[in-house]
Amino acid sequence: MNKEIVLATSNPGKLEEYREILAPMGYIIYSPKDLGIESDPEENGTNYRENAFIKAKDLANKVSFPIIADDSGLEIEALDNDPGLRTARYAKENGGFPRVFDVVLSRLKGQSNRNARFVCCICYLDSIDAKPLYFEGICPGTILEAPRGAHGFGYDPIFHSEEADIDFGIASPEIKNSFSHRGKAIQALKVYLAIKG
Image (cartoon, rainbow, N blue to C red; front, side, top):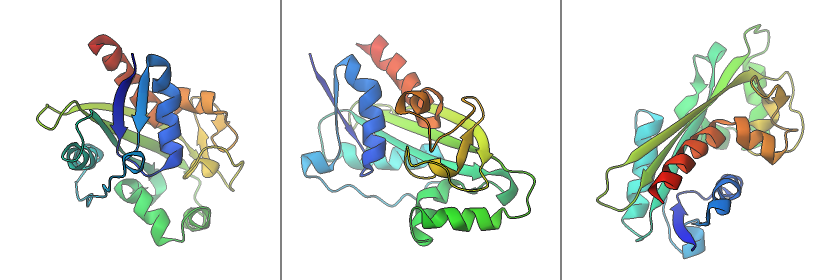
C-alpha cells in the first residue's frame, strides 16, 4: 500500500533525492506545488533544527499528510563556517548558481585550509499535534579549486566528498545518496519509517 508524505521544498533536486530513497518503501512524496499549496515561511531559527521545524509546522497547518522538512547548509572552515544557515540565501544574494561559486572561490583564494562540510537536519511531523522527530547527517569534505561536473545541484560542483573520495559534481545519484548529508539523514529517517510501518 502506498503511503503519502509531503516534503516542504520547492527544490526539484531535493525532491528527487527523497523520492529515490523512499519510493522503494512504498512512499509517495508530494511537494507543496504538487498539491497546489503555498508554503514559504520565514526561516528565522538559530540552527538547522529550528528552521526545519518552522517549515514542517507551516506545512502541517495546511495538509493532513505527515510532513518532512529539512534545513541544510554548507559550512566552510576558513570562512568561519559561512555560509552555514544562510546557504540558500547566500546563493540567491550572489546571483544564484553557478555565479555564487565564483564568490566562494574568490573568498578562499590563497587559503590552504579548504575543509568544509554539508550539514542536514530533517524534521518529521506525523501530524500537526505530533512531537517533532529529528534526523541528522553530516558530509565532510573540501572545497575544490574550480567547479567540476554538472551532476547534483546547489554547491555540489565545488565540493569534494572526503568519505566517497569523489567530487559531487561528477558523482552518480547512487554514490551521492550514500554519502551526502541529506542521504545520511534520509537513511536515518528511513530506518524510523521502516520500524513505524
